[in-house]
Length: 82
Image (cartoon, rainbow, N blue to C red; front, side, top):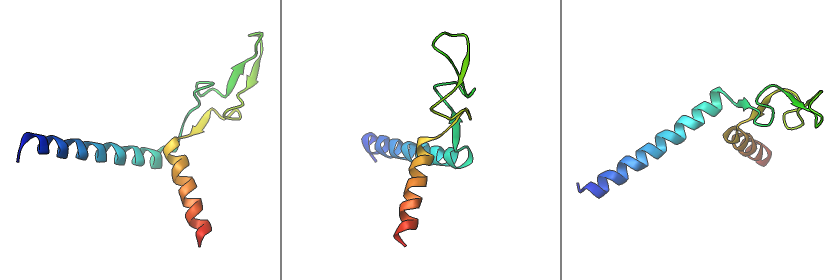
């Protein structure tokens, strides 16, 4: 086996491992901290004196991961097709 083929196989297996790892993480931990409010659920008002509820996460401080959102969408399409 030449080095180029060996490198291609290693890169392919590494890509599969990363993809499966992310899928597992989306299954176990479907939410991540909201990037807008850093997971607190609150944002400072423009005057910097008061707090407001973060509009992006509705005050929960959590957002659905992109991979989990895609999985949920595909599952609903499959469910609606029946």
